[in-house]
Image 1 (tube, protein in one colour):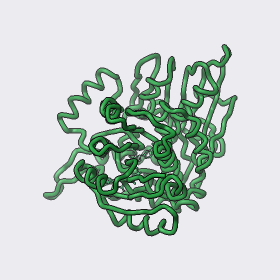
Image 2 (cartoon, helix red, strand yellow):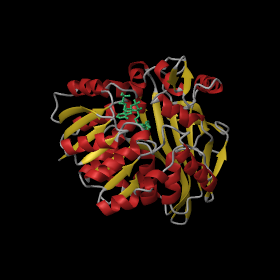
Image 3 (tube, rainbow, N blue to C red):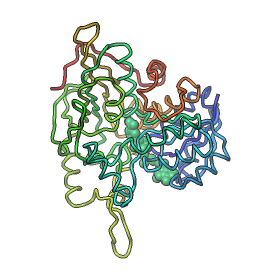
Length: 418
Ligand code: NDP
């Protein structure tokens, strides 16, 4: 049915690529392009026996012209950006220049947060909006008109969270509620990799997210709190009791706009004590800094140096045991009555490893990346502009989750988070 250019070949991309190859009717031809071509070649070799035709290429996606040249050469129907959020804008620019649809799994954030031009816009947004995360949708929403005029679709954030969580919200609104009052997104990783400290996806992105102030949406505005200052315990099905902490998360920003009348949206993620202790210590000594320092005549970025020391997230697969449980709890009204509803997915790290050679964090992100791409390639989701997942019909996406490895469950009497 179509050709996809996949940029990035890390933990998440590797799962998405496995899934594209399982779905060869839709993904007839793919090109895997990343900074390090040897990784693309190794994966292409591993998957070479299937029906999907695979090519590989080297690309620096920070350079728009390189992406444009690659698109012109491969002529894809869709570009799947599964590199890093730093590349979102250059890849969107390249898609516009070449007239190709776009999708990604995380919203834009700049690599250099000290860049004065970016900083001025960021400071203004912090004041106006009331949250201080480095990532936000404004940069990519600014492309809406250009994509509309070009007749192209950009699908933002089709991973699990963001991504599936927003499909859950759209589904709840379509089928379960007349009005949604509150949404709590609960992301639990009950997996254990045996290391005192490691991150489950790109360490730089992960540590930036977790060390930032938390925030939630309430009664039409943001409430920001110090990092990790709101903690709750929750008993997750198939995982058990875990401590979870309120974080800022990107889907809150789009859901606040797209779920009419919603009064409160919060996001919680579970963390073990060892992870938090290590993170606090690394932060205190400056290892999470993105500002370059001069070390013995060479410029290094502390968090990038730390990344080089930490286990590669892709290597955690064989060691990680346990399950993830990610979902959304809703309160609201249906037919004039108060109602609560919980929709969630449970995913087993070892099962994922058996199937695609990755742990569940990459799996739960890579599968929805393939599904989002499938929605665009098949034309199931087709409207020009720049959209997040909850802005499309959730039904085909929800059906595809069941089919492609992330079946969801429902509870109509969930324990609520206080
Ligand atoms: P990894 O670090 O494992 O992989 C990133 C890949 O992008 C690597 O192959 C890397 O190449 C490549 N890359 C980086 N910079 C460039 C560049 N300039 N040009 C071309 N390729 C580049 O990250 P993950 O797989 O863990 O994460 C991928 C994305 O998924 C991120 O945007 C992350 O934020 C997002 N994510 C989303 C989630 C969700 O639920 N929505 C959850 C988890 C992650 P190289 O190997 O050379 O470094």
